[in-house]
Length: 383
Length: 76
Image (tube, rainbow over all chains, first blue to last red; front, side):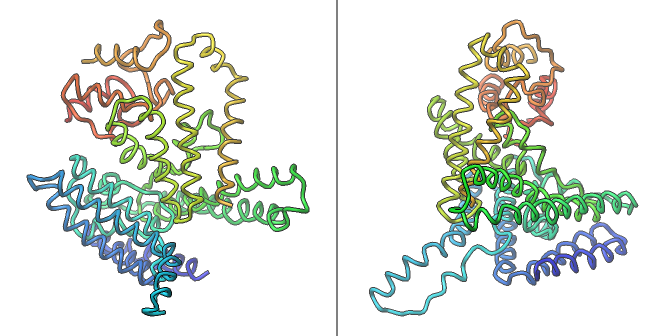
């Protein structure tokens, strides 16, 4: 509940003060500082990392945009961010092994790797800063000043659960002469937050309550109940996560900001590729732009492109979700799904009759069902 | 440039030779091209026109029609 109180009080305070500030530039600085205080109140370690990563990214942005050796500095800067996320994601997991080694040699009993467990929001800020530096390297961004970068990285409305916005989109909205307050912001914000709260606290939590009995005592229930519980879990995850996204989009709207959509009816898609363009869209766009495309260009070999690239990209996507091995399996499962789908698309392309059949309503309905079942089975890794 | 792109897209992504596409046909948003499969288009543009288009520009919003592709290519 602590998190909820901090979020609500930060939101109410900052949205009132924000519109009292006459200059947009000062509003942005204010919102950046408020976001930093929000992170500090949540988690002191996260606060330190946000400051460190922002200074690090800000420092490297000069050489990535201006140096003669852009490519070199881009690689170094991104590697540093990746190293940061790896340390914080896996230090806690490695704790057990370190402990065994330390005990064996009896040097000391005191260690505290668990305190290095991934602080809140770190996965999101690292992906945001990698995209910022890469877009800067590609010439898609202007170099940000410190407070713009800090606001982009730590904006409290999207800090904890995304979407993983791109600097280019946020920058266009921040660096305007002035955003004039409009009652539309209140209506749109209220509407979206209400949707989000309904999805999260009514639909997701009630479904969770209903299926909780099956998860707690699985031996007492038959296969049918297990299937229904898994189906419910699939819906619970969607309503929960998309509810949070609605709240993030809605609260940002009260500051005049338009944050990208993160879901687009993902369970009504006809294949796994379409699913990933509709589920956690900001993450799958990120995976596509900064992993899928660059990896695909390493080799034109079909096996590499159709098998290894989806497995590697989605494997990393899985690892981003958490440090436990089950997330890697979940990512690989989806990578295999995308791989099979791409091979299927290639197969049917050359067969006119088959292609015509795949365009019928019957086939499309079946495809939606199969995709939903595939995704739902995948959620077992999350259980 | 438009004609070259249309011919490449027809050969690479569309199975039916009789499918007609123009410079305004929506390709990604209509599902004719899967956005995950656009790597080959990026590579083709790089080789044919010597222009490297970053992946964030190859989206359904900015790279949906051949006309949009030509605009983006001219930007780089």
